[in-house]
Image 1 (cartoon, helix red, strand yellow):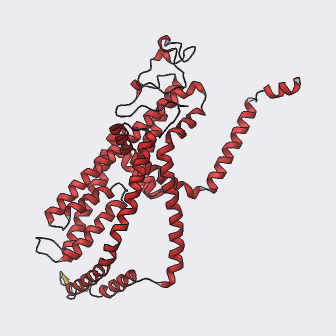
Image 2 (tube, one colour):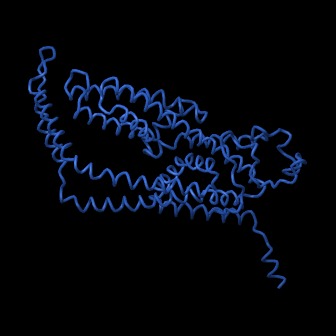
Image 3 (cartoon, rainbow, N blue to C red):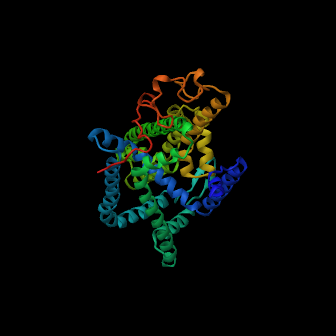
Length: 411
C-alpha cells in the first residue's frame, strides 16, 4: 500500500512533461489536418457571431437581459429574416426572370447595332461586330439549364447545404455559450497567470471591437459616396444601390464588385434618367466611376480607417489585406487586420515580461517581481490572482466580463 501511495503521489519529471506535451501537440496537429475542411465554416460562424455581438449588447443593455437571452433573441430574429426575406422575394423573382432575360437579349441587339459600323481611329478601322455572335452564344449558354449538369449541381448543393447547417448551428453556440468556453479555456492556465490572460483577453477584445467600428465607418462612407455619385449621374435606384454597396463592402473586394455588377445591370436595362446617352455608354460610365472609386477606397480609405481603428500603420494594413487576398482568400482578407493587431498585443506583452518591464499601462515597475502576486497590493490581498480584472481596468466601451466559474443561470 505504501508503494502504491508513493507511485500515486509521484510527480512527473520535466522530461516526462515535455514528452507528453509534445505528443499532445502532434496529436492536435494530426487531427487538425484531417478535419481541416471544417475550419472555414467554423471561422465563418465565428465572424458572423462577432458581427452580431453589438446587437446582442444593445438588447442586453436596453432591456436589462442576460447575455444568453439577448443572444438567443438576436439569433432567432436574424434567422427568421434569413428565411422570410428569400421566401417572400422568390415569387417576384421568378415572375420577373423572363423579363430580365428578354431585356438582356435586347441589350445585346442594341450593342450589335452600335457596333455594326467600324470604328475609325487615325485611318485605322476597328471591326467589333464579330464579337456579337460570341457574346450572344455565351449569354444563351449562361441562361440555359443543362440537364447533363444536374447531378453535379445536386452534389454541390447538398455539400453546400451541409456546411450551411454547420455554420448556422455553430453561430448559435458561439453567441450563447462563448462565455463558458472562454472561462474554460482561461481556467486551463496556471492560477498565477490567469489574471494576465484576462487582461490580454480584454485588450484583444478591444482590438476586435475597434475593427468592427472601423468596418461600420467604412460601410457608411462607401454607402454615402456611391449613393451620391449614382444619384448625380441619374442611375435609377441610386440610394438603394449605394446602400447595397456599403453593405457589400463588408466582404473585401468581392462585395463591392457584386454591388457594382448590380449597378451595371440596372444601367444596361434602364439607362440614365437625364444623361442623353444610350444604355451601353451609360454602363461604361458606371464602370469607369466604379474603377476610380474602388481604387480610392482600397488604396487610401480602407487602410486609413482600419489603421486608426486598430492602431496600426496604414501601409501595413494595405499590404496585409492584399497578401491575404492572394494567399488565403476572402475570409483571410476579412480577419487579417485584427489578427495582426491581436498578435501585436501579445507580442508587446511577451516583450515586456521577457525584459521585466510593466506589461500593462497601469502596472508599476516595482510590481514586476513581488514575493507574491499580491505582496505589493495589501489593500487588494483579498483578490484571487486568477480572477479577471476589476471593472476599472475594462477598456472604454466594453461591458464587464463574467468571472470564471460563475454560474450561468438563464431563463
